[in-house]
Amino acid sequence: MLASTAFGIAFLIRETIGEYFSAYFVHINSFISYAKSLWWMPIIFIFFIGYEDLYTKRLPFWDETKKLLKANTLSIILIMAIVTIGKMGWRVSRLTLILSWLFLIFMHPIIRLYYKKLLFKMGIWKEKVLVLGAGKAGELVNRGIEKETNMGYEVIGFLDDNPDKIGKFIGGKKIFGKVKHFTKFIRELKIETIVIAMPSMSLEKYSKLVSTVQKHVKNTLLIPELKGISLISSELSCLFDEELFLIKIKNNMKNPLNIIIKRSYDMVLSILLLPIILPIILIISALIKIDSPGPIFFRQDRLGKDMKTFKVIKFRSMYLNADEILNEYLSKNIEAKREWELYKKLRGHDPRVTKIGRFLRKTSLDELPQIFNVLKGEMSLIGPRPFLLSEKIYLGDYCDDIVMVRPGITGLWQVSGRNELVFEDRIRLDLWYVKNWSLWLDTIIMLKTIKVVLSRKGAY
Image (cartoon, rainbow, N blue to C red):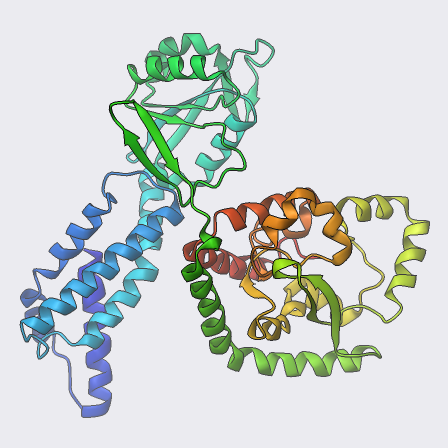
């Protein structure tokens, strides 16, 4: 249905453009005739969408978007091949196909997202879930499922073996009783899916629990104890005779091809953005000069890829005597001093920041000059935070992992709370990014960055 709509819109756009240049007028009859002749195209889309299990699987939004991108792209490629081999170019122009593809890659995920959310509210796309384990893992599962209502899961409640927790609530969901009574609650609450969120349980007990639970529900979801291990790019294989599963864990940043791809991604996107960014840089430069005395740009030594030091370039957002102002302010304000020690930033009032500097920080425009660091090969568009040299000691054993890649203008921690996160959380997120890097992850972070910048969430 959506594929047909995309072709219809693309056809009208193409013909409207054609009318502008060649005085061709689109009649409704020509559109109907055009649509009838292309009856076979939606079948190709249905095949590839089905091949990606998008009609049956319940996936988080970004996982589904990735599969939709693949399905729509393969569909258009096959259609182009058929049109070329069948010499049907007189009926289906390549411009129409490209416009259809552009429409689908942006609108298909969004339309599916809100359609599923609507079905969820209507109670049609809904599967009742019971979570075994009311600890941190269970709490995170509940939070994640509530965010992704498009998956069609509804957490009804929890079971936990801690008697002190029974009867209490987590995120508005009740802890009904002990885990051993799960069959009773499956019947009473009409549960279809169980999530086992008890990662600290011994392997023997865990295996036995999974085996028992599987007999009573349609689906069983597991939360294993694999914290800190990269699983996004992992592959699962099985040794049937030995009844063993093998998890292949990749280090994507050790693959030379991936390094080339990431650098190419940076260069192409940076060059495309330059015509937009340069005029903004000129305007901001003039405003900084008017606002306070001093240089336009602020340069500071930062920790780069492979432990190399480089000078990060930012718009100057502070007064020239910022260190003196900070020391005086912290000596008089105990709460601010505690905040500085915890976050390595002042999240509220910062007396060092100029008037234009506050605006630049709120909008993250102070980071724009780092595009030149990217072009020089010192930074990436997306990557870990460029740490101060003095912060190296706090990175500890994780330092070698974090400096495997170039630091980024934006990154996972920037779209996960930014300055609201404590320093340890920033390190954890940067480490997770390095271990789980993929071009798709970079694309997600880039899109989320736009949302964060516009909302100014976490910016100080």
